[in-house]
Amino acid sequence: ICYSPNHSLTLPLMEVSDIKEVITRWQQEYTNLSSDPNINHVQIFENKGAIMGCSNPHPHGQIWAQRSIPQEVQKKVVRQKSHWDQNKKSLLGDYLQQELDDKERIVLKNKSFVVLVPYWAVWPYELMIVPKRKMASILELTEAEKVAYANILKRTTIKFDNLFNVSFPYSA
Image 1 (cartoon, rainbow, N blue to C red):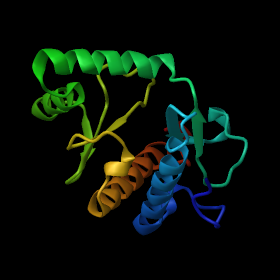
Image 2: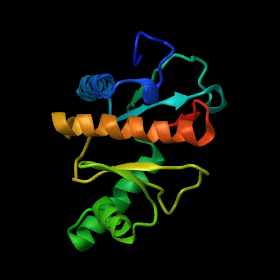
Image 3: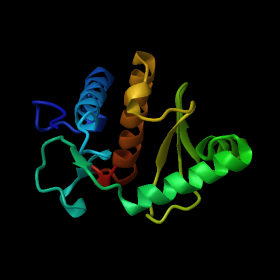
Image 4: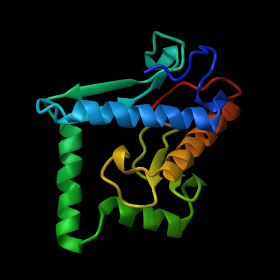
């Protein structure tokens, strides 16, 4: 999925309204792909920069749709279901609340999202964007939440670019 016809743009250089349109396209593709009975997993991602294996410099992301569900995803489903069965609460929601209470690893937040360094981070500059309300997929984003998500994506990527004074490579 190309993010812009202007191939010199990256997320931190795009307008929030244009990033919101990318999110809308993600939703459309997610809907189309997940409606196929042979597809059980849809993953939307971006690799930016040659060091991250991106061979095309223009602003774009990719979508994988597959019959099999990756093992890491299966493990997370099992853990989250176990937590729900024991506590009748969301594991991610409980974790987010703990991070909001501790205030140690919060990088950014807005009305709908929190950007934090997960305590299990393995990459030197790993961040996680967590919605403040429980949702099963990006299809549940309201129009206001899409704007908030676009805003937090832009602000996060600007911080990375500014930290190193380069167009920062990443996988998201």
